[in-house]
Length: 265
Ligand code: BV8
Image 1: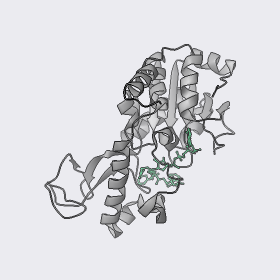
Image 2: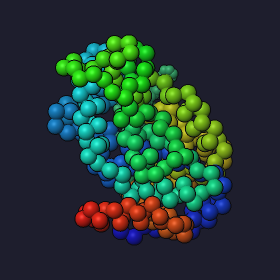
Image 3: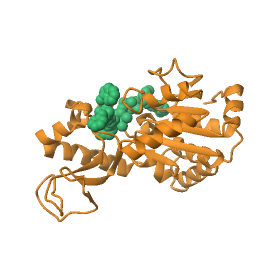
Image 4: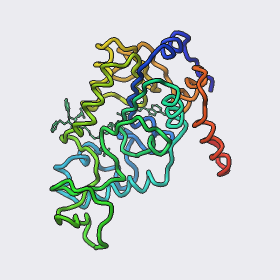
């Protein structure tokens, strides 16, 4: 599908010294990882994710919440980054100052090669204990679900930010700081509903940045956007990298490895 990137967008991006990108679950949609709003499948279809992703749900039914995350971790481990993730690596390489802020917990940006990045909502591959926050890489085999912290015996949980929990202070501060200083802010694959991440596009606009949105649908920030590119991130982002005339090293590498594995990406 041909993607039309406006000339004035290309010109604005090329002139930008500092670019900030905010990604949401839509960027991992083409990797086969369901977004929050898509119905959870099978056993989980009966639950509202926003009810499960809370400390209250964990206190009420730790086993249920632990098994929901185990199911999601399993699904993410079987999936892999898509061309949207790799295109963002090429953008990072070609942009003087670039910061990727993700709301996603799947670790795909890091896996694809992004390095100037912040995970606002944690990472599903990391585990910590509920009471003390001790990061735990492994735990003794036990039938108890969830397992317990080897250091303090409190229940283990995923190292993600639940609704009602604060975003890690350092990440939040860095995100707001970079957003205040950028010339271009891109909101990609996010409905821009969840706070405080949803404030970032507003903050960027107020600081004088130009806003680019990439999303097949209209969102809460579409009115703010200088450009809304209606399409899938996996299509639009590679087209943007090519339209900017930037090297497509990460994109080409992903394509070659997909072909080598006999799958067309
Ligand atoms: C906090 C980890 C305070 C867990 C997640 C005002 C101010 C402050 C807080 C609030 C506030 N109002 C309400 C709140 C509370 C709450 C909140 O925001 N509620 C919402 C429902 C209104 N916020 C919080 O609780 C936050 N904490 O503010 O704490 C505080 C401070 C100090 C001390 C104590 C407390 C914490 C929020 C973090 C929650 N954790 N994830 C987990 O994943 O299990 S959020 C989770 O849901 C995701 O990370 C994501 O960010 C969010 C939404 O998920 P999705 O809907 O799936 O994704 P998204 O919205 O990104 O939508 C998908 C988009 O992709 C769509 O637009 C779609 O069109 C598009 N798309 C689809 N396919 C494609 C595509 N785009 C491109 N290409 C495609 N192919």
